Structures are given as C-alpha cells and as structure tokens.
Image (cartoon, rainbow over all chains, first blue to last red; front, side, top):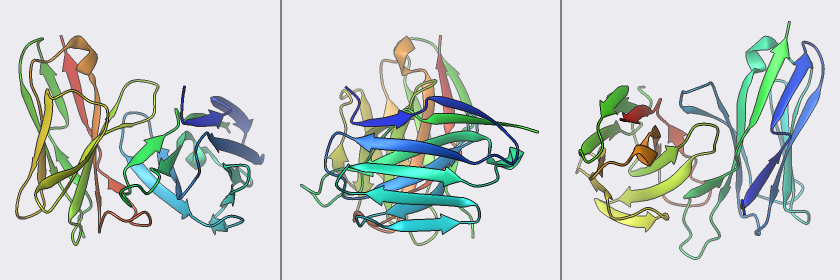
Length: 114
Length: 114
C-alpha cells in the first residue's frame, strides 16, 4: 500500500474558488514537502513543514502539518489558472540514516477553469 | 544561478539496450538523488549520491547504477532495458543529506523503451 495517500486524486475548480488538498502518511512524519509539477516537467518546490502545528504560506498557498494525524493539507485561496498542475507531497524517510530521500504520494491533478 | 540541469531531454531506446542519463546539480549542492516517475504516479526514489558514493538506495534492481563525479555532477545508468523502464527520470540536488535539506529538481529526461 502507498505510504503517502493524497486526496482528492483530481480536482476541477472555477477560477476564484478556494480548495484544499490532503496528504496522509501511514508512517511518522519527520518532514513533509510540497511540490508542484506541470505535466511531464520537473518538480517545483513550494514549502517544507517539519514541526507539528507548523503552517507556512507563499502567496496564496498555505500548508499545514498535523503531526498527531500524520497529515498535511495544502490550501489555495482564490485559485487562478496559473495554479493548475499536479501537486505532490513528499515525506522524508524516517531518520534511520538521517537522510532526506523522499517517498511521494501519487499526486493531485488540479484544473482551474477560467 | 543555474538550477538543476539534465540531459538529454528525451531518449528512445529498444529493449535490451543500455542508457546513460546525466545531471548537473544546482550551484553549491553536493548531494544528488535520482527518481523514476511512471505516468500518473509520484516519483519513486532510486538512489542518492554524496561524496562520490551511493549512500541510500530505493527498491530498484542492480540494472540501475550510478556515479557521481568530483564536480558533484551525476550519471544514472540503466542496463538491459525493459519496456517497464519507460518513465520520466528526475534528478534532484540538495546542499546536504539532512532532513531539512530541500531537494531541487531538474526538468527530467523522458525515456521511452520500445
């Protein structure tokens, strides 16, 4: 089974609407990264969360980490067509080796209709 | 400041052949990780190089091997190609191996095996 489950798998919203993407881990989270990917291209780093309750924002995107639930959410306010793409969460492997190799969810495909 | 670069952009090979993909890390980064991303899935960790040695490895067969050079650039080699090796291969670099050392990704190499 997937170590990281993302929901929903895909999302279609009208421009201007808010939306939330969730990422739930079956293992203890030591670091959670959010990336955005345009189809067939590389990943663009959005933000990294490490501590429980931590919340970070960049422009209209906010991410939170709930350590107890082993879950992170990504919230986009007033969505724009430029927000369209695939959002991926990546969890840093538990620190047996104190290493940053990541396990990724399958991604959430976001479409924003003008 | 150039980001992570990868070459070639696209590659078509036939079953049984061998392929070499190349990656130049972001300036100041000494750690390179390789990921395989099948269509519609999240990236899967292949291995990570630091100080010219393989430090971590994901669940990939020995047909997948790599190398890191003194200038921190890296190569991914795949022998005896299978149809299932068709994927986007992503290289990521980071300033270290720590949990909070953010990985920055290149644009990827699209490998098609016929």
